[in-house]
Length: 332
Image (cartoon, rainbow, N blue to C red):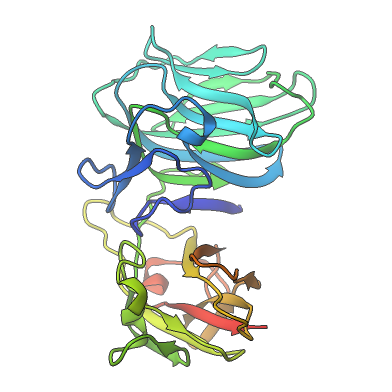
């Protein structure tokens, strides 16, 4: 299993998307968690959808919680040629209210009839792009297989998938996950933030007074303004924060398959540390991401780290996440 990307919009931002033109957060009509995504208007090009750039590959699994009102609305679209060619898509058919998969010479309609009253569905797709006419497609609705196509041809058989988009006009979506190896299942995404001082407090804090975690606990992210951040000019400094606990509510947590950490960063001037690592710490053991470049720019940019193992090895769990620290390390 290899998670590629995931978001539940819990940090109050659409920034994980590569092309969010028209995409807005909707805190009034929630699907799960703190926010869902929708559109502020009607858009008819790829930039009008929530789209992710993904590593070029021939096999992907994707999952989303989505509600729909109206017809002809895309649920997933898969792109190639640096996200400029739409290779195939899954939509809701306007006449039958059934799922419809479309590629160059293939149209497949599912068996289920769906509601259009903002009912929340869990859509999952497995897609394998083979040479010639041997692509494979399976679609599940709420865990039940609805579309099963053993052969299709995309717009260009030479292109691999390098972009995946979610939703269209008249849709709201949440808990979007992409994997390159396995079905994702009924996964929900919950956001946690810094709630206390962790093992490391080596970075400086902006302004006066207060603790490091209080500079990085804003939701939406960076709402504290220019005087709400941590910083360092020293290589190999670490900063970590005890995180808030997971909340189960009406959805008990059976397992924690993966965890994603986000940081919003920028480089000012000719700083000595030009890269960072994201940090998770549990039971005295640190887990560090690979080196992430910090860009020298006027605005911040996002860096992320996805892990499917706990610090020290083994599977993640609710107990581990509730005791975990997250943070950063400055490196050359």
